[in-house]
Length: 77
Length: 77
Image (cartoon, rainbow over all chains, first blue to last red; front, side, top):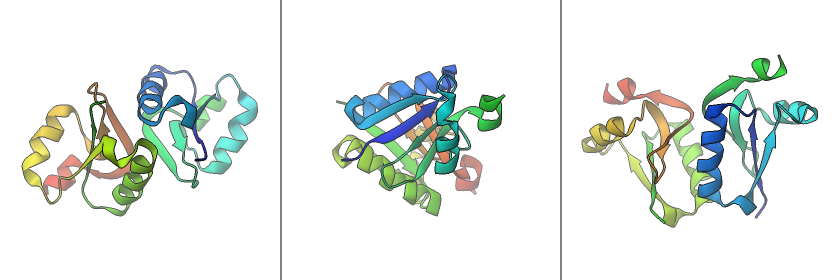
């Protein structure tokens, strides 16, 4: 099974959702990317359709925006 | 492991998210409830903190609002 990618930016909403998603899917199935720290991956997230964080991109390319922590504009600052 | 409960109301956004979540967590770990059809479970969803669908309530009681299909007010009609 391909991995899902969970993008977040370290906000409290993000961290809470990360724990829930990793518990649900299993840590081995989810790559966690902090785009607040690893800013080189912001374009990749935007290209995948991520408009706010936390969000998860599934192996088939769907984007699940989970709750609302911050917009991509806020992350880019 | 306790089950998560995925609440939806049959909308296209809901169905898409349902497939993604079931693929991610495994069908045996998620109870899927259509509160558009099974309206008796609307109060339970609201008490759990669900404000829009699709949403998932995790075993520890966190609510993950996923994308946005419809508000609870719309579901109640």
